[in-house]
Length: 510
Ligand SMILES: Nc1ncnc2c1ncn2[C@@H]1O[C@H](COP(=O)(O)OP(=O)(O)OP(=O)(O)O)[C@@H](O)[C@H]1O
Image (cartoon, rainbow, N blue to C red; front, side):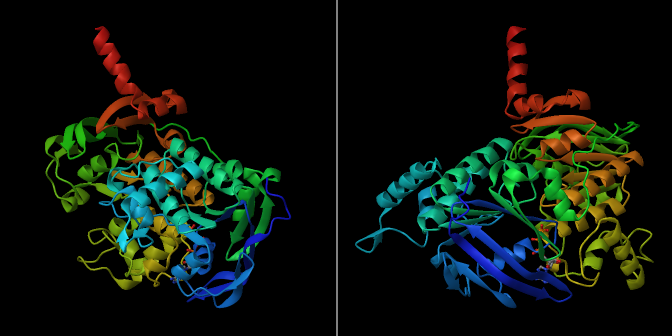
């Protein structure tokens, strides 16, 4: 526990930032003490990213002051912030895949000898830092070959090499497996114990309760709670965030499966080998797996975004094995991709236009054209149903906060009422209240007789929603469980390859 008298590492006073139509930060005061892990929480659009980008010199505040390590700061850019001892780990890493770990860590701050980069010194430096902070990683490994958890370590090492005393992490566990997340928290705790400071932006209550010292909660741009973690609870934080009581971990009734909607046999594509599965009307089938075991490739092949090299896929009895993405959509498929920025939405188009995308052949359109009044009304209805925080339907999608963009994407795809929905990571970056809403909407979609194939890295989400759970490991579907068999331990083992080993052992005995 941090002693209360520890000096402030970061002090934000009266930070105000207005965007057209939105007061993103409204006179925010935030004090982060040296040596603590400080969680910054709040619903989507509450103003967390704006506040952190002001602290890190990426955005200018309209009013207010910043002090870092007791010194007045006026950062014009992230390099100014770095020079003052701040470092930020973004959600999308900024690493060079083709370079080694050591090259990435020292990049742009290389140790030199006679004017040349001293590679041996770089390697030594990585080993020293890694040892000092419990961040084990091979300095010679190529970054592109590393799993996500280790790439994140490289990002942290890079900041430490540049002398960062305060680390800002933006939803660092969103892409990590539970074991990787635990390892990250062990590192953060050891950094804090050595007097470094950690600011953690996250939606995950459990990790805040287990891993932080204090919590600041923002709502509508204002600080609504300052809490000592040891003295608070999940319910209290959730209530502070939303202004109401939130029912956490709601249990849903099982579905009543009908006819087969999607029938996949022996599908093979780059990264997937001979995957067979069916999804019925009125059923949610979940795919669990550690990221990178072929789940995304399978979904992309089903969506028509990557060629199927073997096997057969049928949708409502029509063979779509080699159909284009558009043909599949027309045949009854809707798709929520993992990447909401690059694949899912058009950032320069308005919120209303984004919500209308793909509706050119539906009741919204009149002879292939979308009448503006209809598009606006459609947008208003979805904005309301999914609680999308946008100052107006006409603002560009790029003005939405991350979680609100996710709600837009889910809302748009559900509105198609397609017989089959493929959905990847439906609640990544989404706040707890909105998670509940999205889950309820997916269940209602199922209960209306639609088929849903769900990929999620959140085991609790898979277990909460899926009527059947498949596990993917090394490109294959290695196990299938009914809802009541899919406990955390069984799934965890299968995700680590346990089901394959079991199957191999059975074969060996036979
Ligand atoms: N460049 C921008 N132009 C217009 N509005 C913006 C811009 N950036 C942010 N906003 C608005 O400011 C508010 C705060 O957004 P911010 O991204 O800080 O929220 P957040 O708490 O980080 O949300 P999330 O949890 O979804 O990431 C939102 O209403 C958002 O729409």
